[in-house]
Amino acid sequence: MNNNPTTLLQELLDIMAKLRSKDEGCAWDRAQTFKTIVPHTIEEAYEVADVIERNALAELPSELGDLFYQILFYCQMAKEEQRFSLTEVLAALKEKLIRRHPHVFNNEQPKAWDEIKKQEKPDAPLLGSIPSHFPALSMAQKLQNRAATVGFDWPNLHPVLAKLQEEIKEFEEAFANHDQAAMSEELGDILFVCANLARHAKLDAEQVLRLANQKFTRRFQGVEEQVKASGKAWDAFSLEELETFWHVVKKTEKIRN
Image (tube, rainbow, N blue to C red; front, side):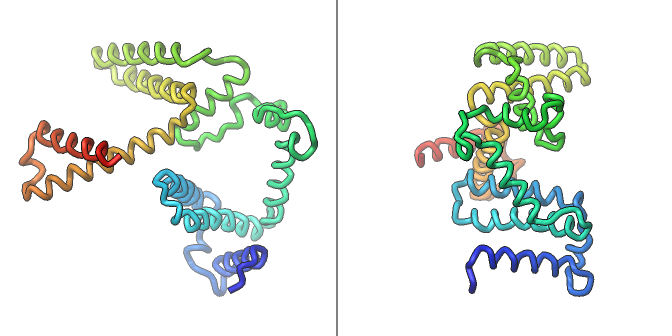
């Protein structure tokens, strides 16, 4: 087996071309378009994040390979339409890395990342270049980060906490008035402020929520195991009894940690 990176890369390009070929290819691969592949790309990126957050680094090479496959797929489709190839992608990446690190490659003084990006597109609207398909919490933080570059930001975490309390109060008022539209708007404001709270705490809101989801899943599975061990059905237990199971799981986790 030849493990030379250059040889392997060419072999992968050949495999990708064959998968898309009309005569020998795979029907599923041939049917794909730029748009149909997008959900798979997002899924693969999240799977990379998942193995890192679970510290399952033995799985990381495989997941990175799946993500790299997405890049090869886009490049093959673009090559078929005579738009670009992997060569142009790599050349653009090389040029961008050098341009964005002038302190490393050109002996210049370090510049802020946002300042360098602004120089690349000086006339672009400040918030216009943020992709609309970003996960909502990630997009909120990117919007806030971008606005902060021109001074539109709270000075520290304390006024953000005060703003969160204000938004919660407004949601409570909307709830009391049975105003569904207002509740939706106020809840959106709460989530937006929560993203800002994470930003000021130097945390990633999307990652924090993913970890919370994982924790809930893990603990709920612990409750599920206790229900199964009892030999009873879920509806045989009151909420208070299920919460007792939940606290048993939490206590066990703390002892293990």
